[in-house]
Image (tube, rainbow, N blue to C red; front, top):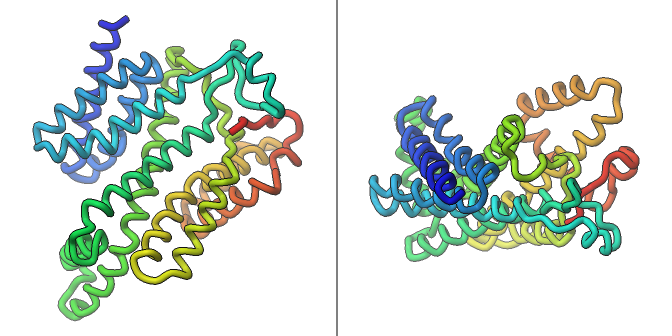
Length: 327
């Protein structure tokens, strides 16, 4: 088993590192680079924590060929969080132990209760917040902090685009300053989306090949903890009421904390769709609207996920067939 994990993990780590390297080769490379966590997740969800640990080390070493900084970035943005999530995802306990806890409705199969997906989302969210905190510490001695470091880069990027022509050059610093305050939130949420999509794809592939170590979760049963909702409200208040750097930090934290509620909102939509005659058609229409009107619909989904903490729409309308995980 160790030899198999070593071989498979090494191949997965090499594949992941190559995908990262292709990100600089153009639009197709960026798309392939977005899939860099997929081999890591697949190695872990099919061959266990040892395999994904080996994959992460191999991927970091190959990335380090471009410099120690590249290897370190790969380690903290891909390898380490995937190892953590896979380890938690493969945790299970006998169902009879869970049955002694009042109200336990976590996913149970083969007499095992598996680690809830909602908590996996919380681990990823915490990691994203940690990456943001690390970025703040590393740029704390720079003028303007993290936004101040990003602003000149954005000025150069905007100047290279058609709207950066000479007649609009005076507006570039102001536009870049505004974008610089938004980019950390964009990066944080994009990272969460990337990790969530790749983890879900890896579990789907493992199940399709019948190599999965845990059953595929019922994603529409995802639930979150209420303290997370309190933290989101606190971050929003800080963003709107406090000036300067504190407001910037509050806004970025709020954007990252909103992502789990976006997923819970999607879970509500999927849960309610099971109650109609043509759920596939309803979901197709919903996602089409989400793509067309992205930001607006996305905010509404976040609000729906937030309200679900207290309203319990799935419990009310989905009936006994829509059990939720215990978080």
